[in-house]
Image 1 (cartoon, rainbow, N blue to C red):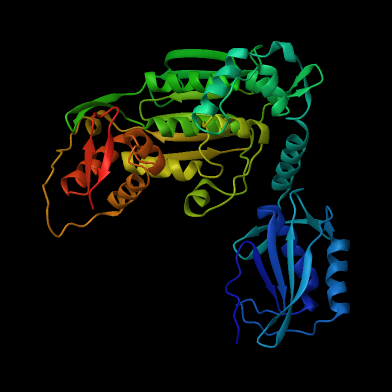
Image 2 (cartoon, rainbow, N blue to C red):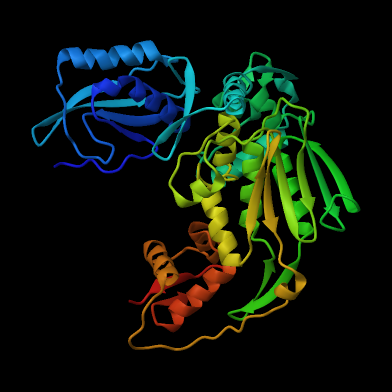
Length: 452
């Protein structure tokens, strides 16, 4: 018997159209979680294709049920499929106007099951949807003449350097119009928080003597636009964490206790996914044992951070304009990959992270090592191997990257692999000692030569 596999969060099976109402519940729950999915009639829950009678009438019945029960309206593709002479109805659907209801009720998908949404979850759906639809595009009270031209210039320089904006000369007006950040004579809300010079966003930053908010050693209040505040926030953290010096391959390298890329990812995602029409502030707190980055507004995704680490999921973007501008300037590396990169970098650096979600905001937590852990040193042992050498996973990855572009610098390799510079240097040393690569020229202007 032909089998279509297992049900999952985007795939549902029904034995016959006698379960058409249950099928509509599955459509609404899948849409509310993933915005796209597939439903089959004529398939057992285990994936076995048993088939059913398929006629113009049965196809119309499914189409009518979708039209009458699913709100807002969607337009699925309903087709007849044949597997080993067994006929089934396939319903492919998608929609981004969440939340969707089935027969007036709202559902969410959990694994391969549908459950009715709670009042709190439903409220979150409607608030987030209203915010997303209206806020970014709404005209702000700030005139477009009050744009921070230096922030626009900084954005352009970063975007051009990242290869995400064509090289050229851009005026502030050109950028604002190109990315729909103005409306008439005013900046939109998105344009204002990104580039406004009337301090549209507030960031609180503090250092505490203990792990409680009792005694602070420093307290700062920064008011600026997002483009500037990302840099301000990054520098505040990097200035107030511990750094170590290591000699790697005869070169002195400054190693932060927390990888710089982790700090950047956490901050960029905080500013990208916040709600900006409230009264709460962004917040950075530096404690002896942890650093927290607080983002105002309920968590933007229906997926937990660990789901983004384990699976390849699309990012749930609350502020599309803000996220796009941060992506173009490479503050955000890729949509949906932030937690994966953070997880990889933290593992590589031997540190842990966590998070706290509540109705008011999302707090990202980076746990710090204690001093005794930081002062431990690792011996750098290199062995000249000439026969029967094998490469580990990291060595293979770096070797493949260098084979495609021998000009890659150590920092570029670290970025592409989501590893620390320390790990990359040790990998390069190992590849060199094993006879796979050779450095030609200076560390700054040279390149790698592939030997095998």
